Image 1 (cartoon, helix red, strand yellow):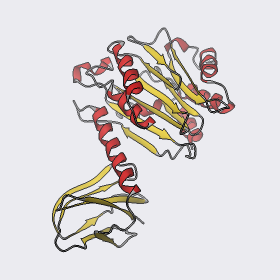
Image 2 (spheres, helix red, strand yellow):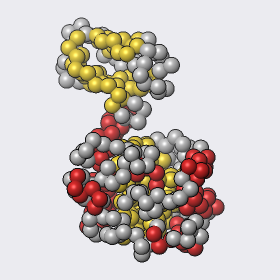
Image 3 (cartoon, rainbow, N blue to C red):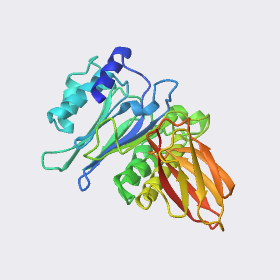
Length: 333
């Protein structure tokens, strides 16, 4: 659970961390009741487990909180508790500034959004005067954007512009917002590597989700040197969207091919029903849209070993020699 996870962090991280996320956005959608959180930083898994994602706290049906710049687990837990008590984003920030665990509020940066009692969005940000330059934030009716140690003010301006001018779902808008910061040195510590950051994440919750099981929770905690993590995150996101679309039009057993056994324990057979076709490509995706396996094939059937994937289910996507593709859901046991 979220509470226990944060209290565990309090035990292993008694002091604040100087390395933490440097540009991020939290937002809500009053029409759908969705809550979203996205960000990136020039820190990765080698510095903090999970990379930039550590600053994200998403409370389904309520709101989202980002605590960054000299991140401290106690400040994050306190913000979480105040949101559950019903304080507004601005009230939570005021409380955090007045009750900073180390009396160092001037070093902190916060971004918070939520829904009020009538379901209307509220948002607030805070940037302490001792945060590293460039530092600042932007607040709209349903979003809060904040960053520190940035190349310049244009980073948060671009994040905001992409968020406001992108159509589609709240998740689409958040992903586009991160793309707005995809310039070398967006986090200025990464300028010498020619990338914006070293880790990136996007998280989305529906009101019916539990905090530990969000319907979208993608994270790129680390990338090879010189690789852009926002692009890596975009690939995960595109795969996730494709899986959602395919799943909406698929059953456990597609009409043009069959897979057996289903459920499968270690291996599954995929076989075309139409003898005039061949499999040209086959891919296996996790429930979150991560590519687990992708193979070029030129045969009527294939046997896949899935023993390495400890998941409750996965999606098998088959492209046939006529250029068509379809998906099936495979249960794993």
